[in-house]
Every structure is written in C-alpha cells, then in structure tokens.
Image 1 (cartoon, rainbow, N blue to C red):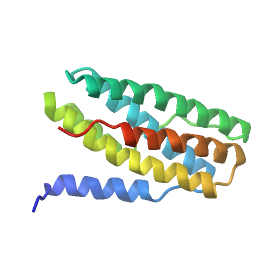
Image 2: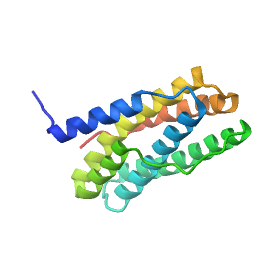
Image 3: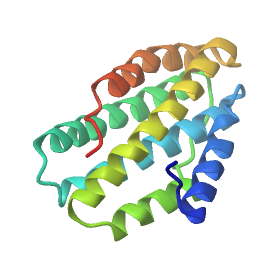
Length: 162
C-alpha cells in the first residue's frame, strides 16, 4: 500500500476542501477561477524554467496560453454582468503547491507539476461546471460553460506522470 507523507496528505486534503466548495455566487466564482488561473500560469512558468521534457514544455506553454485566455474571458463576462474584478490571489493550498515546485529539482519537479496539474484541473472542472449550471450571473455562467470543455481537454491531453 502506497502512503503519502502526513504533510502531503494534509495539503491534499486542504486543497480538496478549499476547492471542492465550488461557488454559485459571482464574487466567489470569480475569485476561485482567478486563483486557479494564477496558479496554473505561475506553476507552468516555474516548470518551464527547468524542464527538459518536451511534452511537459508543450503542456506548460498551453497552460499559460489557455489560462491567460480564461482569465480574460471571466473578466470580460464579469464586466458584462457589472461586477468589478479584484486581482487574483493564490489560496493557501496553491501557495503550498508553488512552494513544493520551487523546492523540487529536475524530473522530480516535472513529476510534482504533473501530479498537481491533475488535481488542479479536476477542481477547476468542478468549479466551472457548477457555476455554469447554478451560477447567479448570466454572462459569467456562459463563460464558465465555455471554459468547461477547455479544462476537459487539458485533462485528456495531460502528459503522464514520470
């Protein structure tokens, strides 16, 4: 039986708890979506600085492009719905995941990145699906619905862990 260190288990549980409580109100959805996109771009830039794996490079570059685009889509939708968007902030679990990537080196960083990407995308998918179904602002609901297939495509094309 494979076990994970207590700190990693605690972190995984914290991430699941904070992200699983997806948002049906606009301000919470915007904050969570923005934090998710910020984490994706920061973690991808970190791994790009050191990876030698061409599949990881391709994936990380796609994450930067697509998550930058989804941030713009959410901001435009929020403006259409009359909502001001604050700059995104990483949550505690996302900050810890970035710290893990910063401390990892070489192939271990690539492996940690891919593991984190899987978890982050599962959480993002749940967030966008829930808001697309139950959200309280029409333009944001439409944006969330447009983001869902992009996140699904990320999950489907994610390189395998090393």
